[in-house]
Amino acid sequence: MPSTWHASLTLGFEHGQRGTVLRHCAHSGPLYVQKAFYPEGRELAHAYLLHPPGGMVSGDHLEVNVQAGENTAVLITTPGAGRVYRARTDRTAQYLHNQLEVAQGSSVEWLPQETIVYPDAQAILNTHFNLHANSRCIAWDVISLGLPACGQVFGAGSLQQTMQVHLDGRLVLRERMLLDRQSQNSYAAMAGFQSKPVCGLMIAGPFDTALDEELESALQVQCSSTLEGDLSAITVVGKFVVVRFLGFCSNRARQTFTECWRLLRPVLLNRPACAPGVWRT
Image (cartoon, rainbow, N blue to C red; front, side, top):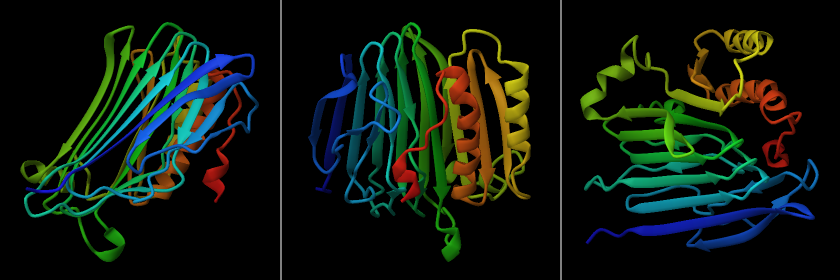
């Protein structure tokens, strides 16, 4: 029988006299957080997700559960790129599910570094937010398909990616991408990936009022300043800002999203941008 490996991590944040604290941290397998950091003061906790194997092989099943209690503020990132390696010949899937519960008056920023999906991988990547009254989220996912620097395209692999947001139990935003053998033509199509191996999605919201024209203009300028060959755009979906990227370099995707984050964060979360220290290592 093919081998499988399950790893899980549950993080519980609470607000108290010392600000936002990591009150609960339980893990099974090689997936954990060592401690919370406070480069912005005690009200906002930074946490770094650690996965020592560095990637997922066939049969891996990773689950991350984040519970942000009332009036907490949390930023979660990773110290390096994630990887989904080539699957076994039996095409057993590699599964990652991130579940984030954001209580009343709280905010969660989910800002991982890119995920490299190797040729012939079988990746299922889900990120689900459950927001409640007066809660906010900013999140992004950057995917790099294949190993273009080695001349290896994504090929016959499969990628299912979903990011969705529920607000007080109601689905308000859902983005889904499927790339498999049946949809390989979309990789080269002008209405698809245009043979660009890097795609990214960023969401921010919900905004209580219509997006400020000055902010929207600044975001559009940022998206239009990408290098030749890269594409990025901003749209407003309900109460959320959605930014998309399509290009050739994951670093440029993260740079685009980071600059948008620097514009969005002061307005949505009433905080100036403060890049996690691990991004500089």
